[in-house]
Length: 498
Ligand code: BES
Ligand code: MN
Ligand code: ZN
Image (cartoon, rainbow, N blue to C red):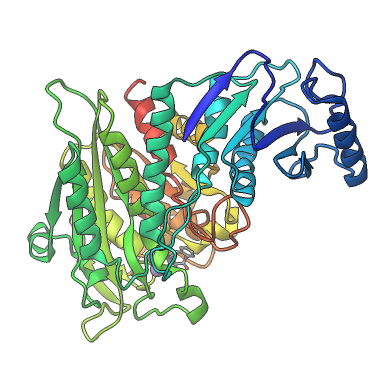
């Protein structure tokens, strides 16, 4: 697939598909001709005008107006962008990117031209990236478990873009590789939990290390026992699948550079344990390793860059199940940090595996810790399925993450680490319990994790909402979204001063 940019205004002739994004209420498409691009012949222009009128196309976001020309050898599609340029131009172009892919696939178009006119408003390079990123991203399908569907996906050979700042071949390949990293995460989330268990995540990480500059360390049950990671072990105890704590690290730097730890929740299936979930709420729980999947994807993308920073992934991988040795509500465990926890709800397992991973990350030298987890249903209640929650006491780190997310088209909202609720974690017999009361569950979960961070700068990302798209109504098919891969990569780049 070849992507080219055209700054001049030569006509986009010879393309199977021509996409014209159009702002709402805009009188013209293209400044040269007051109504439609001048490269359209008079009869074509008239036909398009009639089509616009008959379909009431007004450029509203999501609106579409298509016209087939010359016996179907060419199709012109006007895509509504919504209200005029402004801050939202990047997100409008993201939608165009995904829509262009869909148009290409529907028509099996070999070549596509995108004729964009910002109406004179300045367009930044990041806005070209936004369109391309989403175009690449929308290609995703998960067909591994469908008999007979393994053949390659359709791809156009040529994409030509007018009216947007051009990206170099290197920039395009960086976007492509970032998107590949997102696909790795989506595949891991979409895989069924009988195949994607903790040992499988170990294999994935070992293979990744073999192919890249990353090194992989696997702490198994024995080693975790020696370390005293009893909170993590308590979650894995009820499963036939052995638990692991996997680390992936970029090469040690000769200079003194900051160490960033990315900690990803890797519960390959969450039945709730003895505090068992309902049948309906268990159906998505293969996705409870989405945090780990996002970190693995991000590490793959980061491994290809030379950054003035050390990055270490900590991936606690367990299955939360029920057998005769499963953890009971009421059990007390001593965490790796030495603090004791009364486990009153075995379904609040994410914080138990994360607290040991976070404590180990800091003990091993992390200066900055970012954990990513499908941690609470409460976060989904608060923010819905499109926004992830961000918790941090560090304003600088929060701003860095929010900026990285904005550049990635991923939605985050900062929620308070409200110390007013800290007492809800009081246990009558241990240092704390693993649940609060019925209110503010995303906050009490974050407050629980905060207790295991000593000096490091820390942020907690609760991605329970956007990690898994159960509607399939957006730009990606129903299932794993690969959410947070891009935000993590761009956050680390920013922390490395890039
Ligand atoms: N994995 C779930 C959180 C979750 C819920 C993720 C919905 C994605 C969609 C987590 O382990 C969990 O069960 N949390 C409990 C905590 C409660 C018992 C304090 C919850 O949110 O109900
Ligand atoms: Mn749970
Ligand atoms: Zn869980």
